[in-house]
Amino acid sequence: MASTAGSAALRAPGRRPEAHLRRADGGSGVRTRPSGTRHPLVAAAMVIPLALCLAVLFGGVEAVITQASSVAGMLGR
Image (cartoon, rainbow, N blue to C red):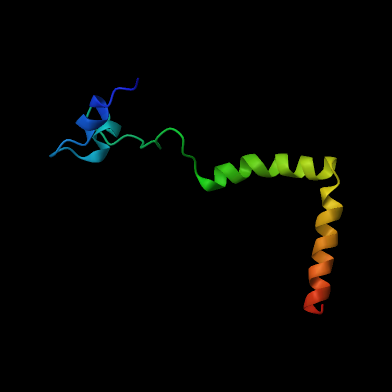
């Protein structure tokens, strides 16, 4: 079972929420993201190559081209 005393101590009155991110020597240091989060651009950079490989492998490129030409036809282009 996870201990909640540590998180409660971080939210104690008079303490700043980011106090646990400060370096021991008092400098600001580099602020890190809490575990489980990542920047959306990093997530996209991870997913796009896999998506392209799957599209080529399973013929999704033709489906996208067909769909795009269909939409363009409906728009009158």
